[in-house]
Structures are given as C-alpha cells and as structure tokens.
Image 1 (cartoon, rainbow, N blue to C red):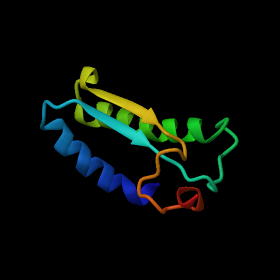
Image 2: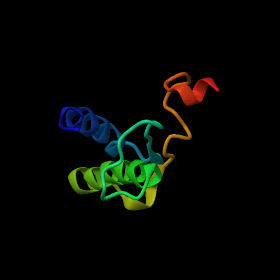
Image 3: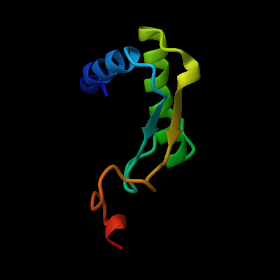
Length: 88
C-alpha cells in the first residue's frame, strides 16, 4: 500500500539502529480478496511480511541473520474483534 511505505521505512530506520532480532508478521482478514497470484490468505500474508523484510534489507542494510518473516493469514488478527470470526 503506497501510503504505508513512509511508515514502513520509518520503522525500518529504527530497526536498523538496533541489534535486536526482528520478526515481521503479515496478516489478512477472512473476507479480504486474495489476488490471483496468491494461492490463499497464507500466501498473501506471508508475501506482505517478506516484502517488508526485503525492503528493509535493501534500503537499510540490516543483517539478514537477525530478521525474519511470518504469515498468519486471518488466524492471528491484529486486534480482537476485528472480524466476525473473532466473535465466534
């Protein structure tokens, strides 16, 4: 999402200044459209996380040994109650 690139880069600058281990997590919602290039919500959420990791590795030269990516599809919502599935 183009409007989030500035936020993602700002976070990347902070991450680059630390020596901490970092995991970038991707999420979707159960009703979200999955573009045809992805098999399912797992593929989409993982691709989102990988995009951020690759952006940070290229732009900020973060040591790749301390960064990882994970995709959770719609099974770990960013906030409880974000979808009808959280209320079941």
